[in-house]
Amino acid sequence: MRQLVIAVTAALCVAAPTGAAAQARGFIPPDCDLNKGHYLVNSANLYLQNAARTRFQDQRERDLKDARRVLLQAIDQGQDQNGAVWYFLGRYYAEMNDLDGVDSSFTRAASLIPQCGADINTHRRRLWVPLLNAGVDAIRSGDTETAMARLRRANQIFGGEPPGFYYLGQLYAGRQERDSAVTYFRRALAVASDSANRENAQYAEVRRDAVFNLALLYQRAQLYDSAIVWFRRYRTMQPNDQQALTGMAATLEEAGREAEALALYDSVLMRADSMPPLNLFEAGVAMFRAKRYQRAAEAFSSGLQRNPHYRDALFNLANTYLSLANTIDTTLPKAQQATLRKEYGEKMGPVLAQLLAVDPQNNSVRRLLAASYQLRDLSDSTLAVLERIEAMPFDVTVSQFQRLARGYDVRGLLTNMKAAETAVPALTFEFLNAQGETVETIAVDGRTLEPEGLAPFAMAPTAEGIVAWRYRVGT
Image (cartoon, rainbow, N blue to C red):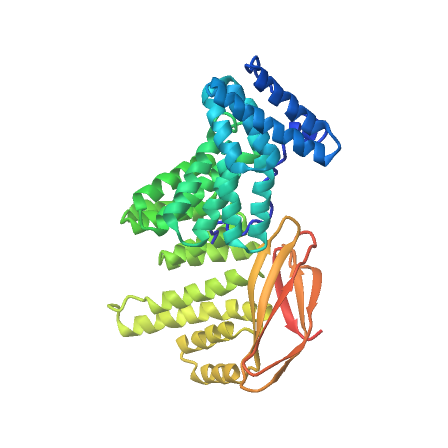
């Protein structure tokens, strides 16, 4: 299932305003009317211009020092209600990279000279861009504390665009701090929806994802009425998003509104032929979690008709049949219960044969195979599989198969199942397209694992059209 998006794979495209490039070449004059009639205020303006234009660092430092001196003198001489004083103080603090000084000075200036609000925001944004990007870099490197500090700082200096709020919502969600996550997702949504950002195409995704994540957060907090409101709002934005549909159905069911939930689940299955397989697999997971096993089996089966090698769907379908066998109505006659268990075991058989062809060295897959034999009262076969599991020297688990902008991020783990050193042979992974054709092959090198040792592995296939993987032991 789609989760809250915690890992940032790419920052939103945030560029400095055009004035920032000019700033490096010289002084950007105020783009609004200022009262520079007082000689000290005008002197500060000239000092700031000279500081921006000089090539000599010592001269720049003297000019900035003089700009601050005359501005403080102007305040002492009764110019504290002149917005130009605070505006130029903000410009001075910006040159000194004193963000607290920038914030307090520009806040005071904006209250006195509202006609300069847009100009002030341009200078605030120029400082915000590197802070925001530094926060995103810290997220990518896994340094959450640094990321949060930088993003809070970015939001302090400029709150006119949503990325800083959105990323903080992600980080708080990852820390299971729901109230803070909700606060920041709401703030991101509000800023992304205001008139200044409404027509900005890059923030449309922020609006959609903030709404979706709010729905998920309320659902997980069991605040079902709120979750339903946000799921409905999201579906007005993305009416064909099947994960939102199944998420809403699960929420309705958890809220005791079973008839509405079942109607939504049925609407997914009615459109199965036109839905992408991955959406059907996601729907199947949601139905399974809601204990609607028969509908989950239909969703997984429909998706597998078009992507028959997708390992997780095969695994989930086998588990769904096992769950159906384990939840047979116990008021039925014993013979009928036995017949139904056998039928579900038989349904598991071909699914597991296909799954073993994809993922042959996985303990969990073989345990499902043993369960399928047990449902069919095939005791000898059950025992043989359990003995095979006991004899397995190592286990292969592929834990991630995540689509990237180009290709996939594939990660897994090799586990030594023995209390003795074990040699694990090389594995050959084949990445398949929708027609089941191998479009890329990557080898995972063999290695020797210490007793009960672990070894992670990772791959990054980039061929076009990849939809599934399989592997074999050996080269």
